[in-house]
Image 1: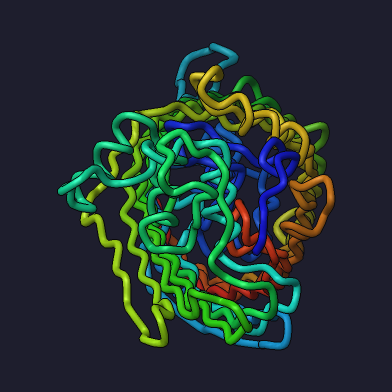
Image 2: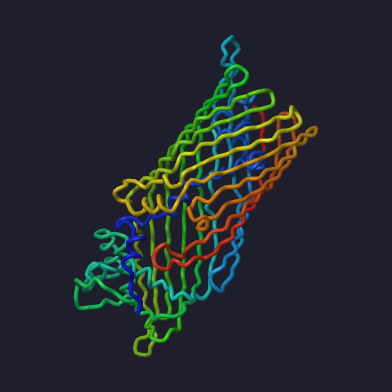
Length: 505
């Protein structure tokens, strides 16, 4: 029978009242402005350019570049392909969705007097900053002697038997709810493991028992794991900017952020190991997350010459307030004196966790652009963000998680380059971006590379733009962050077709 390593617990232990982990911190700390078709065609290299509604979300000084009031709206179709490898199993999943990912307007007020402040702008814009729609599956035979039983053993080790089991006559629903209210998440996981017969106490007659073994024997385990998530991160930006004399643009953004995220995971495990009492396990977990937050941005654009421009932007941390709900389901099939018996532990309880705070990292972006008169331009942006500074709060409740973030994440750079060539009413565009891994090991989430190209047509007062862009990132994702930590290798390719309509007001 498999036993638990106390050292391993110490490394991955989580708060007793919260179920958050490093993947949650990273999910809400990364941003990827979907943007207008022109913005995406240049791979987002707009920090020194302005004059685009999504550029305003990147550098608040960008709205002051508009010569007249301006509005734009954007539709996109996103297609995601996940190719997975898990031991001897390979899988592929493809999904697509259609969405409105950008909309906004900037209003320009020219100064007719002698003041060096030539014009002022105010703007309001919506941008989707991250898309959480993601589906993948992993299946294969785990030959590392790793079963989901390790998940429950990790949580159960050191807990009293009477704190993870039902009382006489008590239903699973009442026990699961009471254990969650009294002790928290870890005890609930141990409860599931014990009541499903996965865990075996060393002394079942001793309420003070704190040592457990598994009713699954060593050997190989067949896994079939499905991951499905939906939702998005978005922000509404309130912008103020001004032009000083002919060469300097300054701006401020006040951003209201919101989170809508749902995730469901389902694991089927079976084994034919000699001596196993449990042969089949089905384990389902569902998460629903909502949140809102605030951030601000300060930015400037300076024309060093009629052709050469530089930009600088500071993005503050985003201060989120987040609420989460979870549900769980566990079923096992065990050999009881030669008869297969199914045990279903379905608490039918929605766990509502205490509200918590998340502070994401700040970011600094430096940009430069060279404009070839009316013929075209080339632009480059460099950003740096220290993901290890991400913090859950109150910090006393998340000490272990915050330590993991600090130890495992690092600062990462992003490089974006884009170009545009104009011929009569047509504009031809292309871009490339590279984003470093936020992990110190560089493989849990790998580097991202992407390219883009697009075309636009100027009708005079109205412009129509279309862009295709694609990005690729490989990651090594553990099925669970506790116990069953063997990884699925996921090669994710995201392709987007974006259409924008923009016009002067």
